[in-house]
Amino acid sequence: MTQETVKSSRTLVGKVVSDKMQKTVTVLVERRVKHPLYSKIIMRSAKYHAHDEEGVAAAGDLVEIEECRPISRSKNWKVSKVLEKARVI
Image (cartoon, rainbow, N blue to C red; front, side, top):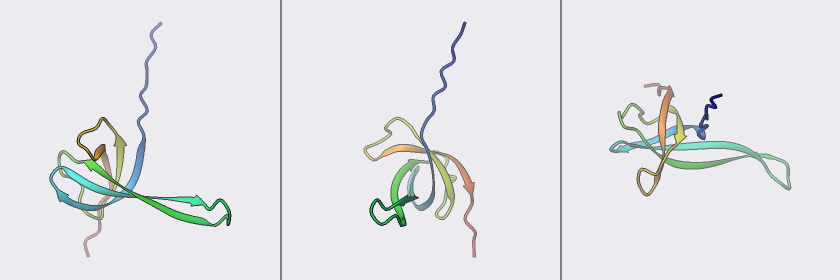
């Protein structure tokens, strides 16, 4: 009997707000939470630095990032796929 271990890594979806660094993008992830006292839905956001080896993600793109080993002091995420390209106006 062989048992396969499936490693499930954490994934987040967010918008690229900066692509000015080499091989790195800054991704803004927003989530909706319920206020503990007032029960109103509020938005919480966090910014993550993600590794983008090929440089495919540009500012305004919607991307999926997944957790990985530490690449640098601030990078523990990598871009797994670009979900939607930014519209050029």
